[in-house]
Amino acid sequence: EPEVTQTPSHQVTQMGQEVILRCVPISNHLYFYWYRQILGQKVEFLVSFYNNEISEKSEIFDDQFSVERPDGSNFTLKIRSTKLEDSAMYFCASSTTGGKGYTFGSGTRLTVV
Amino acid sequence: AQSVTQLGSHVSVSEGALVLLRCNYSSSVPPYLFWYVQYPNQGLQLLLKYTTGATLVKGINGFEAEFKKSETSFHLTKPSAHMSDAAEYFCAVSLRSNDYTLSFGAGTTVTVRA
Image (cartoon, rainbow over all chains, first blue to last red; front, side):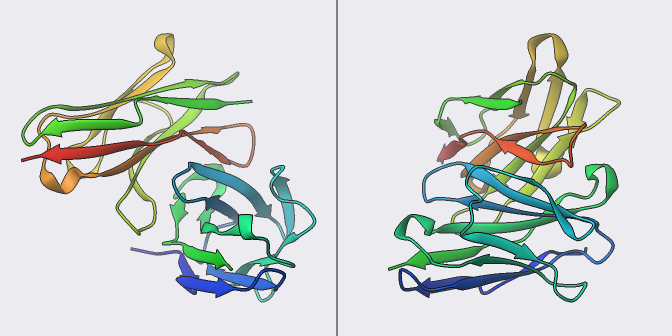
């Protein structure tokens, strides 16, 4: 069964550093998403991406965040200057048109120290 | 805007007993509805979803859920709990009119007693 692949599975970074979280969505999917889950809290939507541009973003997704699909296969989330409160599990997801086949990756646990 | 409410942050059941997890939603348009399961230190696994058609939806691992529009509910059930059902369960809703962004409930942690 097709999977959404996320790398790395764990990342530790110092406060103020830039991090890039990587995702490989399912190949025929057209919609791409990032969500995050702070430890002990619910999963929160960050951003959706379609047709090479952001289609929707939440209040969490401020100027410190950016997304990119650099080569037609990868989908990345960049945090420019990490803060302690950015520590969370970050999930990538993808879907086809109509929201079908919505699939989540296994997540990247980001720890900011 | 849509929102999801899961009643009960923790549910404890005996092995073999009924599992019932409650989910209510608010939405201005008919939504898509999902249940996800998350095992410790793992990602989100889709249990089942309702999009259109039959309101009783069967999913993996013996779970099912029924969409009740009049009650704006999508409760998850399993007739007989197994130890392996211990996990956190999230209800989620997606509007059909946007790009299918999911709004999640706060989650319900299920523990299964031997």
